[in-house]
Length: 272
Image (cartoon, rainbow, N blue to C red; front, side, top):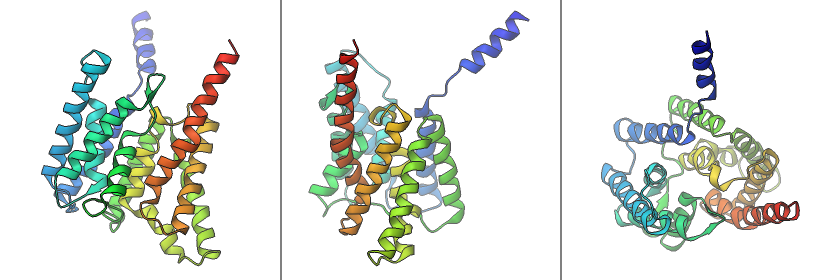
């Protein structure tokens, strides 16, 4: 009886590593893109992204942290890069992957990275080198079956990562702002809501924006952060600035997350 109870206890105490679900989430896109959806990115782009992130992370972890690590996060970053960036050349993938990992180790606060690795790498490359790399806003937005699978996987990942509140807050605010953009600023309603069906937005919402390392650790903080991102995104879209969600997360990290972290630090010090 005691052994049975111990087995039940050990099972209930088992926690799923959200990174494993994220890997499934991203790998499903990679496999579908290469076998069914005819993604623009080839296998070579995926390979160089993985090779770059993994070798860079192994080297920096050894140099900076003085230890060898299992580069699971680097593998996730590589898949994100290979899905988010679209280029006819290979070096933009290498550059984005390299910057993502390097900045992760350089810009840190209290042992954690300040910016989402994929976000900062993508933003730098698409802002400074738009002639060589773009994002993929409509890559798989024309299949209802694919859309259903993507959304279901995304919500499962967000749930186990304990970031479902972030997703719901962002999508709800984005939808409300889309109606405002339509009725106040004259944007066609379907065009305002259309990004929800795009590849970049789905990856952004379920993969990039919900990174546990770069989002608040309280529900209230996460909801406010998501609303803030959606508002910045809406402002950028009204100004017709492309790649709005990626810039919105970057700006929100600077204007919301960094002050939020500083506030938590000062509050913890004052409570001592």
